[in-house]
Image 1: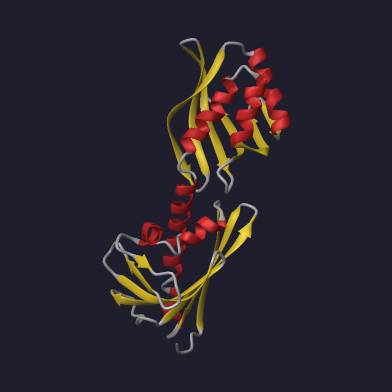
Image 2 (image 1 turned 90 degrees about the vertical axis):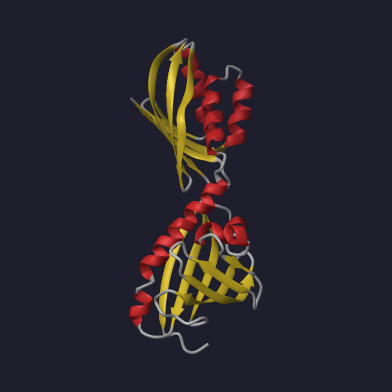
Length: 255
């Protein structure tokens, strides 16, 4: 490849394990899920990379290096559409680093030609990596509604041992919970808080209302507090999930 003097860098953090994130660069169905139907990748040195954009343009290239789950390098050029980068006319390098919130994705795209060609891709990569983050976390948190329902079920559980076991299976040990009546850090504080809520508000139960709304590890869930058949309160909880799909924090909004 000729000299590539112009460089574009982009870094994002995704709430997902690194091994899973890397598979979206090496597994064709996952690759196509964030590029477009018909896109494919043969993730081995010399393998073909193909991107079919929804608008009809095609980009192609060749895989140069694969080092799971840390690094992949491929060439990138347009078979059709604009801008005019010939096949093999640029190079994309992607590094995946461990991060306390999941995985840091570092992308470098190197170009020949002039800086204007690089600049035309800045917004494209900003958009594409945002789409990528959503596709990955949608897979990680495909069962978000189930976790939310299990969270609310714990608040209705009367047996202390069952509450402890259920919470440990869905939440981090250092889970945080905040609402109008709570500023809680960790399961050791949350468990007696739930017991106190049951003691001072006997007969109440909490249920989810409507579908959950998920974006990149953050989930909004509406709820209602019921006493018998009567609604005694309502609100919305914001759940934050960690990279392994456990509940890391919850903030409750009443009203």
